[in-house]
Length: 155
Image (cartoon, rainbow, N blue to C red):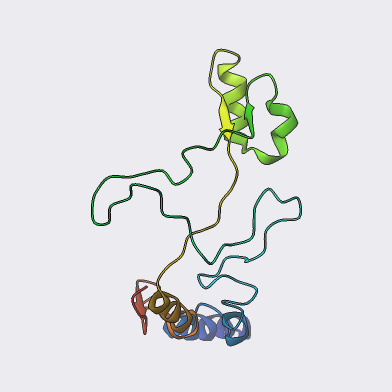
């Protein structure tokens, strides 16, 4: 058997039975420091259009009643920063997907418009959820050719 084929078969056999951890311990150590406890970048972007993550969470709207299906929008009083239309979409093209650009092209002036609101990053979870996320970051493994996760915790 040629050496290249033998090496390929050996590599395939080793890879098929191996488990994969999601991140290194060094990467996991950044959770809650440079990364949010869920793994997103904690800082906002340079131009300020995406704010830094707010660990205090989204403010609870007035009138909210726990354990009901009534949704109350926490930012209902906000107004759009600007509106993108078929007339002005090209000035925002670098921020729009190809599909969104095509929609503006296809439907034109009488088509649709996109209202752009301020960004908010106030999603939070309970502390037990964050603790389990940290455990999962280095302890959970894909097994059975990626069909199952082993060693994971809820959260």
